[in-house]
Length: 379
Image 1 (spheres, rainbow, N blue to C red):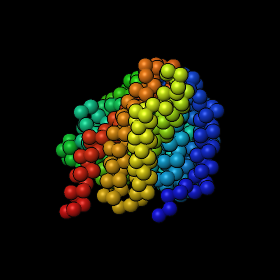
Image 2: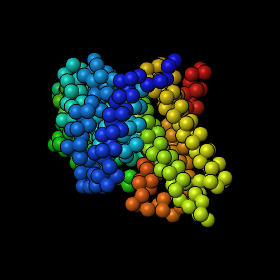
Image 3: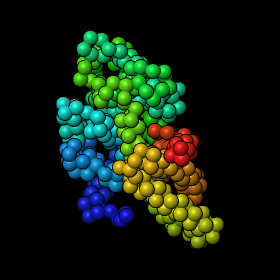
Image 4: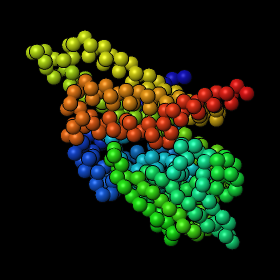
């Protein structure tokens, strides 16, 4: 298989990298990321006009990409600039709509792709420990519609979202994969309470409570009680996106650390000439290349059978989690005390790398999942 990027993907990467470099500088990024809104609507519209959102979806769904490598290209560019705009929500909600939506529901894809609607996945709950099948939020039939009750935690850009993709249990035990259904709910629906807060690495998350929220029959995405497969596929796509984003952040951390080693002097010579630091940097470069290989493998497996796809994704997320923490620690240590300062971009890249490990399953979760899928495949 040829893993070289196509000309279209190279052009997309160049365009996004140039736009992020020119319009999303470090000071601008921090003002957005740590502001009250946690995103910039004007820049979000510009990203949409550039085709950055459309590249995440196939032509059949109104985009012009949609393959694993298209997703990786976009999110690696976003990671290089620590972009906090709601790309992940657009990807997760959009992929679920594409996989299981009715024709009327799929019409919402156009609004996600042009940036006029902001989407967010509301799945994580207090105490679910990354387990996709552990859902306590309940949905009950009420006449022709549904009544939704429960609480979701750490919903990325949840307080800005116009459209929420909500997992809820319509039958079965709290930790059963059977009986999970997916619903589309307006962010401002009656009974929806959102408590937004800033993330330590920039951007916003929200705790969302659903109190007897009334939804129509058309809110159900896919078949009742059969939402787990769609949820797994959707979250898997998000895992690939986060891994590619981390790879982009690692590349910038590596670049800045190399530059520092070449310019910082002690005893009249650049510290990069010290053999101990050369060895540490060489080890770091090899680890980052291993991360790139894991992302490539996951992107290539996105359309494979379930076990192959999920094992590749969990392997990549485990690798990214381990190496991301290593890159953060080593880069800061090789910078010395300045590496921890707010004014230096590196400290923000380090925070983002550490936090990515805790989104959609940390390295411990994905290592255990990788082994469990291997046993499942052997059977």
